[in-house]
Image (cartoon, rainbow, N blue to C red; front, top):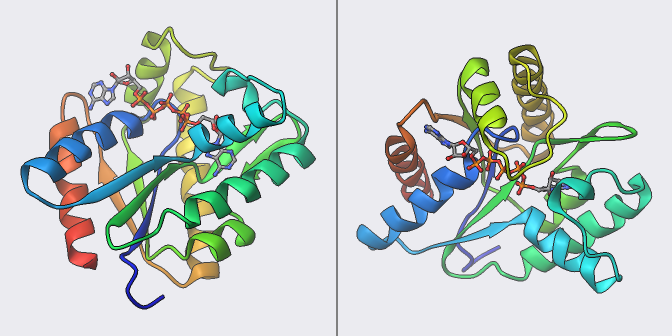
Length: 197
Ligand code: AP5
């Protein structure tokens, strides 16, 4: 992969604030003149579903047939792989997705093979913080809103990250996004990305 900058997988359970932290990261990168490209895996999947005639709310993607999600996931990974270039590529995604068929990996081997990531970053917060953010975010349709649900999701995210790190032979870093500390989380993430170049 000579000549290409690193690809970083940034994952977090729904509502942990990963999109918020990545918006801060974009601003921090511009301020500190560290060029970064950020792509949201869910946006790319949404666009690809639209091309098949399905204009889905993002919370309805995970309710589609697993065979269809698998096909679109693979297409999305290939599309994102083409965005790799001389700028670090941050892929905003999930370690797992709660589908109607069960807990399903967000970055299985075929996705890893396309993306060639150098690092997995897990954005985390306390289960109570995640549950509160889920409850307060009225724009989304979330099924798992208790503190226990958030705790289980955070655990699943680490299990999946471990499996993916072994498959890809890459390290895992954890960035904390505690209440009101999204700026600090973005700064911590920026430092990790800089170290890869
Ligand atoms: P995606 O868009 O990634 O869904 P999501 O995880 O539900 O994203 P959210 O934006 O809701 O959560 P977030 O953690 O980013 O939280 P936010 O920053 O909004 O993916 C959509 C769908 O695409 C998935 O459901 C799946 O179906 C599909 N998909 C994606 N990747 C896939 C893959 N690899 N394979 C297959 N399918 C895939 O923050 C939440 C709230 O908290 C906000 O109100 C915010 O203001 C607040 N907040 C955030 N940080 C803080 C803080 N530090 N202090 C206080 N409040 C905070």
